[in-house]
Picture 1 (tube, one colour):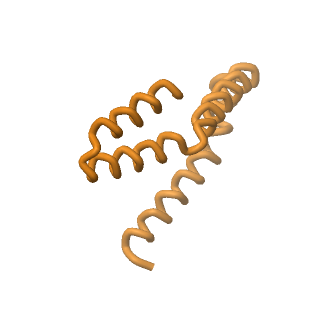
Picture 2 (cartoon, one colour):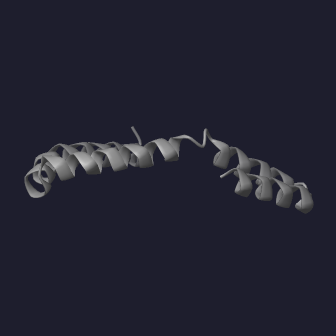
Picture 3 (cartoon, one colour):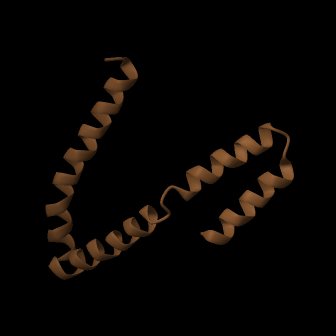
Length: 86
């Protein structure tokens, strides 16, 4: 395992541990009703984030390919189309 992979693994472990500790802290601080509302709001935010279906990544790749090929007008068209779709 390389140094970078080890750092990434430790970071993921830290996030998992933090999540386990934050649940009871937030429940005690906010109460069940507010914590439940927060979970619903965060769920909608996560769904919205995942709903683009990779459109942003695909658009960025296409724009990079077009610009590197010297097709700036096509890259602008892809950018404009992506902006309207979001």
